[in-house]
Image (cartoon, rainbow, N blue to C red):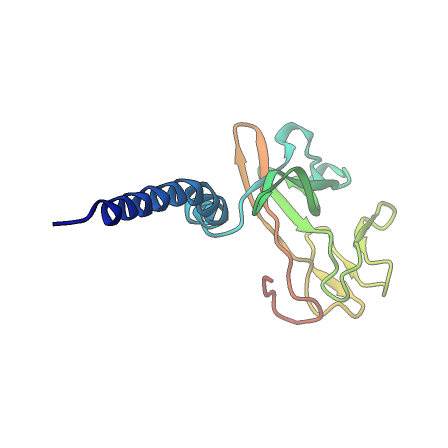
Length: 175
């Protein structure tokens, strides 16, 4: 037969253990929350909106390409939420029915590629690499063409899968 003191000790131990578990549960859930969110995300680079289709200039009609910022909305990093995060910028334009998107980052040294309206071509101001309207390398130290990005058009909105690529290499390698 169990003594009264032993019974009270065991009941107190069970009660304290239950109270500890109840208090520890929110802390454990808080610490595991970023891992839980990662499981729900789809792998790959998300397509971000860059412009409306009716905003895009048509290069075949002599218009200049449009430089647009790529902004991710409602970005979460562990427990921190950012309403807007600028990813970079792109050159976006049409040629007939096709939509194109080029990274503004020069493949040579990472400078920002500008558009020269008089010469109708892209120019890197750092080392004078030049690119044609379709992003093909013309001259300069750039080891490859401008980096083209995947484009989607949905309900009149242009989306781009913005990525960065390894610099100063002849092959286009995403980083």
